[in-house]
Length: 199
Image (cartoon, rainbow, N blue to C red):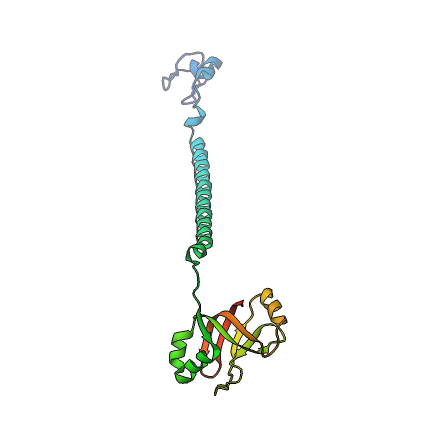
């Protein structure tokens, strides 16, 4: 028999004559089977696998929660943006004018007229002067009064098909009242506005 530690030939002896180690324990099949193995959870590779699995689960959970929190915040933003108009929607008050009054303000002081009327909601009465063939706008003026502007009419932009239908039934010179939002005021171009309702 050979010594398991130093490899010396020990013959039939129980202990190695060179190093003194037990020769019988190493050579007997019973001693090999009785030697306890390391349990799998005590091996280094097991813990490396555990760490990798934990990191991958943690990162995927982190992405899911950030995605869900982003989705939640997106949903909240969408809800707030859809709810905001409901809260801010209030009855619009319209100031009533004749086209002549608006052009008198513009003729007397264009800067003051712009300050007073730009972004104003108005209910204006005048006479239909022009209907655009493509259906983008109409213009109204004061009828017989002529002003010293490049355009002496108020240009009103059509916003939907129901407005087009009403305008289709009108003719040049018809008196009309329109609720609109004035978008532009200028001494050369006069007034431009978006139609809200044709009365």
